Image 1 (cartoon, rainbow, N blue to C red):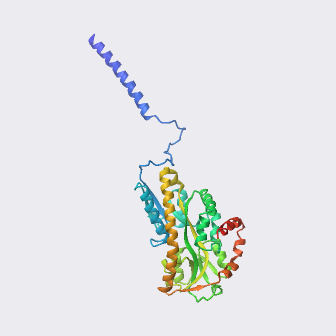
Image 2 (tube, rainbow, N blue to C red):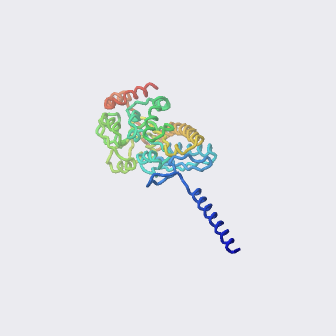
Length: 350
């Protein structure tokens, strides 16, 4: 009798144990219901925990002596300072992460977090920014900053945001000037010469209007092309002319100042959407700080580069009549009626 009672008791205990065990298993593994065949993924734009460390990838196309690199270092310094080290910045200079177009697409896709991209490249994504590629639209640095930090910059920021690019500042490279290996005393002497330009329809139109044979070419191919006389000259800000050793293959600078080079300091929405409000504030303040550093460097470095090119490398600087240049290139504006209102806004800041 005792054995029967004991066996019955053990069966009851075992049954209760199994029920509790099964119930516990369901509770621990149950998740929200999913549609049939659906694979559940973690939210892509979930905000980071404030204590989680973040590494920001900052890419630019220029070398470590460049103006952009100075701006990048300033951004890194301020981000790491304001975040107390919870946010770090890794800089990839010299086009390590691809061409400028690659970098712009990286910002859109979220594979690159921060990058300064020139207006000439951004015009492929945001047509309105091409207003800064028009000839002689900018009078001086003060005029450029006023327009970029004012209503014009606001318009461009909104347009870029629609292309998955957040503009957090406007950087500059200064005025572009032509160089050549041939003797030049006036703008007329450039007629017929092959001058390398950026791959921009506006830039090509500017030089065609001046009687020049513009030849678009990647910057990485330029020095060899000048050595081999494939082209006679090129056009760039003074800092680029010095850093690229253009003085070794060209001996004359024609101070055209035909375009003022602008670049947007872009942040990827993929990064931005993951940040807390506090972290976003760090990015905003670091962008503002870096923009100030970069602009100051742009002015001082271009002035210094001009002096070095003349005094240390023997380049001759030829001054030309800017009023005459503006007159000859006025037709370029006629080809871009869609930019007319923005042109008025830019010029209103003079």
